[in-house]
Image (cartoon, rainbow, N blue to C red; front, side, top):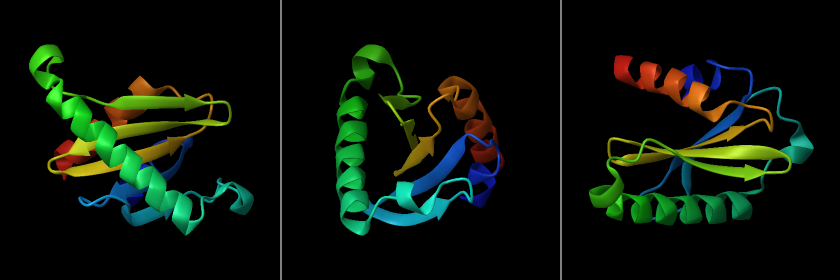
Amino acid sequence: MQAILGCDPSILSVFVLAKEGGVSAVARSSLLPDEAQADQQTLHQLGSVATVILSAAAKAEKIFGETEFILGAFKDGKILLLRVKEQGLAVRLSPTANAELIYGKISKILALA
């Protein structure tokens, strides 16, 4: 997770999604202010929703092909969802982040792992 967190300054945090929902691990950038960090309940909810979204995307792969990533865009940031083998990741990005560029960087890191 630290390699992903450090590969681009627009990555603010990385969450490993638990298979049953929720989040099993979190890494945060020092650039993410304390007041912008999600509490445990919110993290659990976000992890559960992200797991459902990735599962739904997997069902559509017969039509669209393999899911590379799913992007949620908000006023104050972005969430990049991706599947790594059987594990899901949620990557919190700054509002100006280029999701496709960051996905490429993450893909290279994961290919080396």
